[in-house]
Image (cartoon, rainbow, N blue to C red; front, side, top):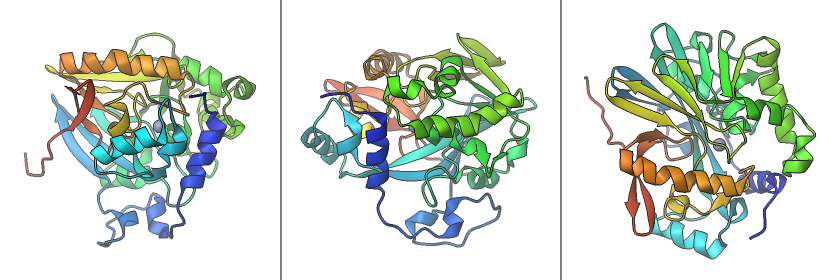
Amino acid sequence: MSRRSFAAGAAALMASLPAMTVPAAAAGSGAAGAKPPSSDLTTQTSGTYQFKVGDVRITALSDGTVPANLHQLLVGTTPAHTDALLSEDYLTNPVDVSINEWVFALGDRLVLIDTGAGGLFGPGYGGKLVASLREAGFGPSDVTDILLTHIHTDHSGGLMRDDQRVFQNATIHVGKLDVTFVLNRSNAANAHYDIKYFDEAIRTVKPYLDAGKVNAFDRTTTILPNLVASLHPGHTPGSAFFTLTSGNETIQFVGDIIHVAAIQFPDPSVAIVYDVNPTAAVAVRQQTFPQFVHDRTLIAVPHMSFPDIGHVRTAGTGFEWVPIAYVNRET
Ligand SMILES: [Zn+2]
């Protein structure tokens, strides 16, 4: 199948958004406090989930979900193949895709992995990160370090609100090649990316750069003690994993190496229009999935179903996702 342009994918994504009435509270304006119970799926009451890795308490944060028309977004498959694999997981196209982040304290630092879409997908589509962060007991000004798995609107869009830096005290840590890629609008033509994604990246990342708040790395780098960044280009040129170790436990925050569990675990050769280099993105999946199985690695993946924490195991000729067990008691 021919390479689809990012612009086409983005247009397809936006075209797939159903007409929905979204209460203002669901847009995630950052207001703290309890929300009333509701059966409305746009106002789920919990956007957080806590778990521990060694001594580190990590909170998964929901930025919301967005509908995705996989017939238009996936590359290297057919609608029939997509529908068949979705059916195996009792799903039908379009599917809702989670946008998730994680926050944890390391010493006197508060680390946030990714920032969601902010207001850039429009009211009701993402933008709940700050509300989820408050639900977890933190305000944006508490965050000292933001680790971006990559620069795309659904990961870096939450950096700004109304032309203000949301995280005034935070330094961004991000792969250098992503910064140089998106801050140069002329790359849009070469990458067949819609110019609006460059403009959105410039609007959200550049203010931090101008404020001296960006640490761009071009090799495996220790961000903080027991927290290491490594580069895995494909989805974007500077896509990074962040590996946190505490005691003898480890978690890897792997970014967008996969978007749809029902499709890309059984068939890792399927790519998505958002992959800057689909061949390299597929190669990353094919290299890392067996490694995750072998090492029994706990991974955090932004677009699985919330809270997006789990393991990979082999299944038939491919793989499948095993979410962590739910825990809800005093510990
Ligand atoms: Zn993403």
